[in-house]
Picture 1 (cartoon, rainbow, N blue to C red):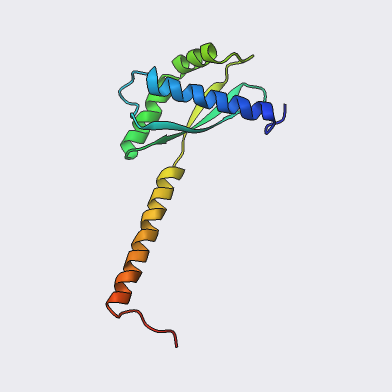
Picture 2 (tube, rainbow, N blue to C red):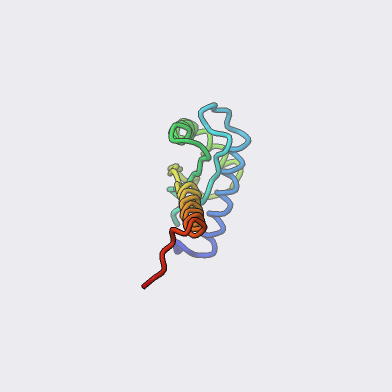
Length: 131
């Protein structure tokens, strides 16, 4: 099975959906932030390894705590994943913090700030004509 085959893509989607349900509804660890989402999942073609990209809506401490909570619950998550999805092997899960959403929000704010500064500069007459 190739890495980007239809079967592998379908497995990635199923694992992502099941991981989201497990994290949202079954784990009771207080370290895991309630606004945690599974952004994407990459399962290797041999179904032995899995990278789960996690996004946490919170500060640095909330991100660290959430990763620590997920790491400690890894055995429970694998058992629930095995029960929820019928695969030949249940992959070993590695949680990776995905900062892309926070980065996008930050860049959007910076762009809005620059646009606002340009508008205020034009109103005040500070905007110079090109010579």
